Image (cartoon, rainbow, N blue to C red):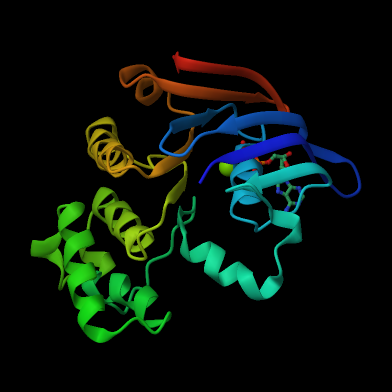
Length: 225
Ligand SMILES: Nc1ncnc2c1ncn2[C@@H]1O[C@H](COP(=O)(O)OP(=O)(O)O)[C@@H](O)[C@H]1O
Ligand SMILES: [Mg+2]
């Protein structure tokens, strides 16, 4: 699914301009970093794509469809096709790794057999199958983040959105998480991730969208921080 922002502004009442006249197109299969300082509008941009927020002005379209015109009954179907790793990803502490991942599919009434296969698949993909029976508290921060990624992959999304997925991780652990995100992208999934980590952006050059005070000040293929 391609993503397009046309003249998109987001004002939080009364007067916080989180995004100002933002324009860009992301094609299916691209990998894009959204960078900028804290408060520059990165999370707001991602939350417009996931339709957690609506623009104050302009059009956000995904797969050619204006998200504002989506009926609320269709939103859950849309969200199923968008894998989301939020900044404050929350795993359910009483459930194991396996159960945290299976849970999101069970919530969608996916048949049990498919839940089992798919959960095994995505937990393997993030390298945690041996830890499948551990609870979140028994895992490192990087491992917890990988569970959040597996959970977001469970419904086979065609678009993957990650808000500062390496925000609280050290360099080595971040590199592991990035490897997983690049593998997801290599399988054809569009990946849009925000970060304020220069090392990450500079070590694997991809398209960069840079925000400053809500304005898109750079859109560069293969850019650095
Ligand atoms: N729900 C909200 N209500 C009011 N202001 C908000 C809300 N969400 C974000 N903002 C403001 O919008 C600006 C951009 O925030 P955000 O998109 O979270 O930036 P970033 O993710 O780059 O740190 C900030 O000034 C922030 O305080
Ligand atoms: Mg943010």
